[in-house]
Image (cartoon, rainbow over all chains, first blue to last red; front, side, top):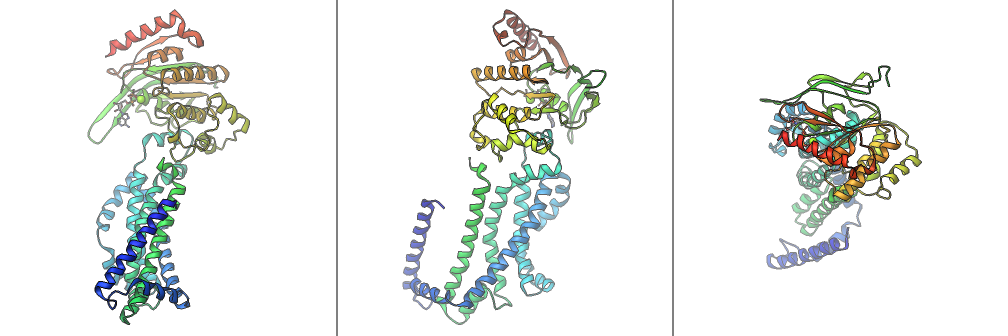
Length: 248
Length: 252
Ligand SMILES: Nc1ncnc2c1ncn2[C@@H]1O[C@H](COP(=O)(O)OP(=O)(O)OP(=O)(O)O)[C@@H](O)[C@H]1O
Ligand SMILES: [Mg+2]
């Protein structure tokens, strides 16, 4: 990260801190605990192993879902984007499937895959899958005819076309979509972790809420946010490293 | 080369582009021959099918009529020994210059000795650009990178589509001289598509004029004086350019 970006981040955090403080004074600390108390609570919590069990559970579910969405959606998107016939065949299905809010399928998924980790991961995977599939397909579609000629005249075959053209052309779009996907994934993670589990930050938040431990609840909220932010930044970093040509 | 000695032969070539609701015939009945170590310039009004003809010779678009033979074999797909420099250079923006230059050899599993790589880069004055991306190069540098990539494949036939079009006059003439040098030193034929009259006369031993309206060859002009770097100052050069200009103006 550049020094400027760090400065902006620090300033934003400070502003949030003071806005939060002001709000907690207005609303009373029963509804919104003041940030300093949350801070202290946070330090107490990270010293316990129980807290890290929740972090680990959430992190694993998130990573598993991102991983499966990636290995399913990216190859499919690359193939569809570079093959007009298949694209035409599947376009209606994707067109109809994309706008359906997959979250509402939660009960069905849970019946099919169980309430455990599998069902939870499947639901998150499904939601990121469509976003990732569509962005990948659309970026693979935008390939210049001259580039195709160029590769073929250099002796490249079908497989070379994938590795030297389709994949690099689509990579920036894939990273963008993963970044957006992280936001969605964290939201859905919270939802699925509020049901039928005793591990994960979603459970941790809901549980503290139920016990009216607001400071602890906010520790959970902040932890979940940090996970989202860090993942977002990692994808941005990867994009900058592997798609340098895009920003020239 | 085969026994009958035909290096490149194009017979009755036609190309019709077929869309959903209309079709467009771009080339029709094109006959053309090219000997090894010979060179040809193709000129004609914009949209007359110059690029189409070149791409067909590169084995990239299948003709709808006629046939192309290369070294006595039918040409239906890209050939190892035919290299192409596209109108917009066909460089891969996501690959560095070094990777772009090496790509052809890499795809064809050709081992290019380091020495040869360096000498081609020196010849074309593109040393020290390896780590840059195409977007960071000037038009002239991009053109030479594309040319280097093609030359490294040791082509017997080099196809160039308006290679110097986007380049200022002085650099353009230097690059034309450059191409002439390389042509004198290595053993290959080339076909250059251009819309520049001087360039056609400077670089084509024969100049093929494509006719936009009749979709075929209007005329083929002989230009035996070509090949000498001093040709530009020769009175014959002016005669030829004037003649060619007349033919092209007659097409409008
Ligand atoms: N893939 C294609 N599908 C349909 N029409 C095409 C296709 N490629 C070329 N054409 C048409 O064929 C005609 C000739 O195109 P071509 O690119 O060969 O012209 P050109 O002589 O190279 O022109 P320029 O000097 O502008 O480069 C044009 O009218 C073009 O619209
Ligand atoms: Mg053209």
